[in-house]
Image (cartoon, rainbow, N blue to C red; front, side, top):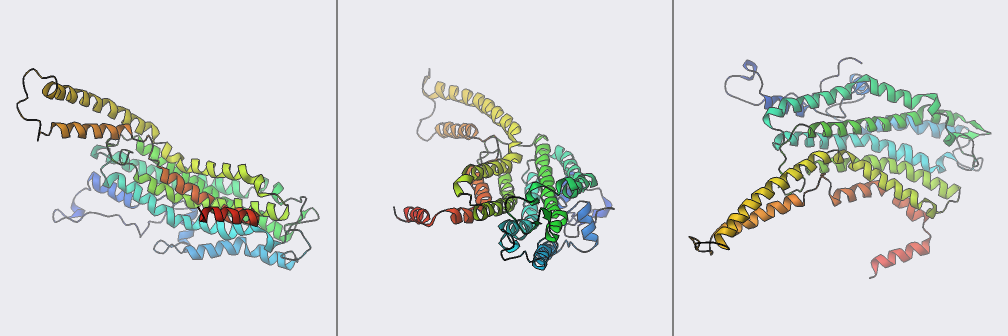
Amino acid sequence: MGTPARNPELPRQTRPTLEPPPSARCPTEQEMADSTVQNFSIVLGGPLYDFLLRRGFVRLVLPNVARRIAVLVTLTWLPLLLLSLKDGLAFGNRVRIPFLYDFSMYGRFLLSLPLLVIAEIVIDPAIRQAVAEFVHAGLVPGQKLPAFDNVLERTQRLRDSWLPEAAMLVLAFFPVFLFQHEWAAGAISSWHTASGRLTAAGFWYAMLSTPILRFLIYRWIFRYSIWALLLWRISQLHLILPPTHPDHAAGLNFLGLAQKRFGILFCALGCMFAGRMTNNMVFEGAPLSSFRFLVLGFIVLFVFLGLLPLLLLAPTLSKVRKAGLLEYGKLAQSYTESFDRKWVHYVEPPPEPLLGTGDIQSLADLGNSFALIDAMNIAPITRRLILQLAVQTALPLIPVIILGTPTPELMRAVMKMLIP
């Protein structure tokens, strides 16, 4: 696809200096790391992105999300509507599920697809900020800055590789994946099948609409894998991780702020799941209770996947915690023995009065430090992060649950929440 275009929004930065001028000296390791961090992205790159950038479909200064969403909806959902209208399958009684009554199409192409595009401007800035924090917070020691810079460059080379995107395109458009049972003739007739054959709208749906959506999903899976791999590689750099850090994650709790942004992807997939559920309930008469375990499994699965990249840091943080407990345990043993000899089991009276001495406060501070290490998490995961990911995953399912709950039961549940 050619050399990827340089991002004008993320210029190579150098720090101002009086002398010598920047052009007359080699950049320092810190400056090189800062420059690589400034240009790092898991979204702004790849052969397809480079192609769209050169053709003007993607802009760097303005993310033009609305334009891309409009183009994708025009390619995926709008032709299905027009072809269904032409064949008289958009509404009416010719088929059991007319196109305009198919909730799964709204979930896939009017909700999930736009969210997958919007996710780029939601997730990527948070990833950049998290990567920069490793340098700005001093977690990467000076001698490891070249290695950190190399990790970021290797990650971006993987992002720009043509082979993964080619494989994703093949998987998305390969005919084996097109004619699945979901659009074959079933017990209930629909807008995409008639007399056991695909309609014109059904062919467009199978040949173009679904592969486009599938490709967007595959590409986010690839980006998510890149992010997880990046975290694992960084964790192998012997970072400066103080076990007594008050965030209970050796200073890595900021990664949770980036990780929660991925909840928009789970929300997008939840929209697809909710549309399919609604179809089954409305057109096949499936009760809401039949989806109880499926909904629970869906939420648990994606919360686990949302935490998985952070769990890759568990071996490193576990070693930090274990080393901290041993080191501070030895320090506490030495200090408490000295404190005991001086103030409790002394041979000669202490040379100073107990009142006003800093020994007791030092003992308390040492105890607080040891307690911080003992309470340290082996992954930068908090209950709040788990709850946020669960809510984002379950959000599209809430209207379906309300729709499938009988009115009397729904009213009783509401009254129980309002009246103690």
